[in-house]
Image 1: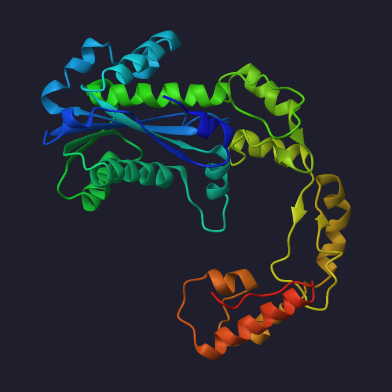
Image 2 (image 1 turned 90 degrees about the vertical axis):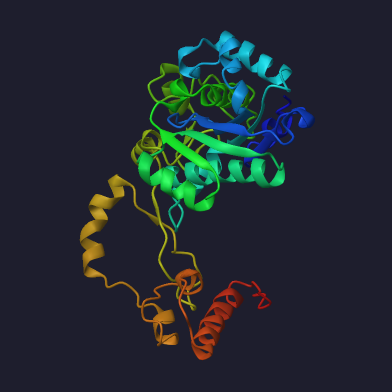
Length: 344
């Protein structure tokens, strides 16, 4: 399978579907196995694999030595992956790569999107694509658990009530289709990681497996940390391994919740490094924080402490309240020589 698109554009998620023989799966009851690779590493993408085959032929996956990808050598995984691609009348698969940049942005966003939710949504999207887009007659789905198996199974059953779904711990060692899916996911992740294209200048481009305990990964993180811009995009900066290094070595920036419309913005970035924090702590206690003008302008929405919150919080609003918020935002943008498009 050609992963060039994901290699050249490593900032976004990508979906790949194998070139399976469609006639071989027409009007045949299929089982689907889903598993992931790269959940724990601090570097590179996480990849989900979904492999389907006729229920009556699932045992044939064992004949091509499909097993839990973690129990196989890299050479064996690549060999089996080639066989899976060749045996396109026996099985087909889809893999979805999740960019480390998107993973971390979601986890640290204003509205948190944790790894479990991301994993659940990715599995749901793969089932949806294969059942509804590819029109495959999938009747049984097997997954390795993410979080509580029972709750995960109920969640999936609500989305796909017609499917028989089984979520189990160590499913990759229990069900051949899940074992095969884990191999597809692992080989895809390894390929994307090995061929990672850096858009930044890196002092060291040897990064090992990407796991936090790998000495090469540790050295890569230490060598490629900028004290202003942080890490390169290969790094999942939401991981505690990366976060602790940023907190220790980088210059902290504090962004105020709302801007004064008469402020020129020059003093909006505050140096909060530990060495400066000690001396400035007493002065900070004496000075009173500025009152947000947005709170006075939007009197009916006292819970909004910033312009962003005003537009992002899903609340029912009066027309007068909404217009007041738009006027304040328009004034804020105008003071910075920007324009507000009201056609939304």
